[in-house]
Image (cartoon, rainbow, N blue to C red):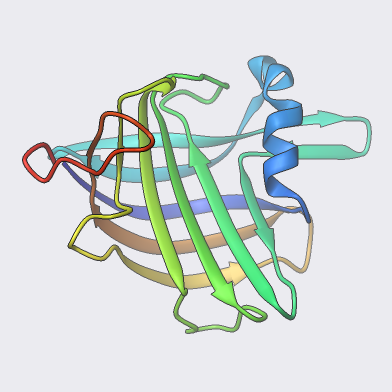
Length: 172
């Protein structure tokens, strides 16, 4: 399965604990709003998916986050087929950078995951696949809240039947 995309304008929320954010706010996303878009081609079909956000007073939780630190930085974009939270059909792009992010800097890790049925198995991943994902970030601005990112990525993602298993190179 090929996942190719032009990441349209995706709004970012600067968070220090992305994993904690996502775990803590999943129930609240049921009434979330579309926050940004991801135009992608999945299995040859062009689609528009959405990042979403939920606000509670001055606090904003989002499925697109950027953390920029001197030791390790990360960009995480989680997109849904509708502008509302869904546990099924989630596409996730995660980039990790050594040190602070700088324009043109290559990530040390890139992972694309497609959750076809939410967090239940099976799902598709680029992790462990021979073809390395290709990512190009053209704009990454986080000076204001929300920030924005534009770029492109292409990845071969293969079926992973179990978390402890290896991707199936015959089902990509």
